[in-house]
Length: 156
Image (cartoon, rainbow, N blue to C red; front, side):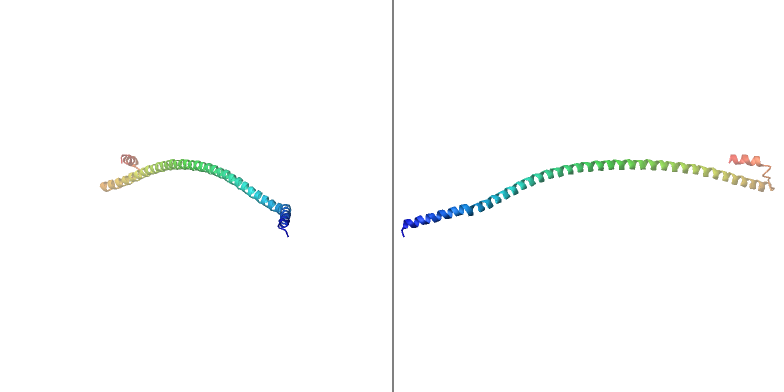
């Protein structure tokens, strides 16, 4: 066999192999590579989209947290003000009640003082009558001398 014919036959076989590869082998491979490239591109796009959504969600969360912090601070301040008002009201009520109790105690003490004075006057009058009895050695009639005993009570 001649080297030229061998080379020519090998070139034809190579051309058939290239044609067969281009016709039947290469399209599924390129199709698979294109599909893989599309999946990667879709995945990257989804990752970018998720990253932007995460960023916007973080911004919304920060805004909500800031809002809730301000609301919490406002509520705490309001609660503190209410507490101060309640304490002040309780103090004023306690002072008022204390004043009422003191006034009632003073009135009661005054009444007891008046009762004690009356009781002492009666006891002193009785002692004076007994003393006068002993001095005079006779019984003094309380009914007859009621006016005298009344004046004695008022003097005491």
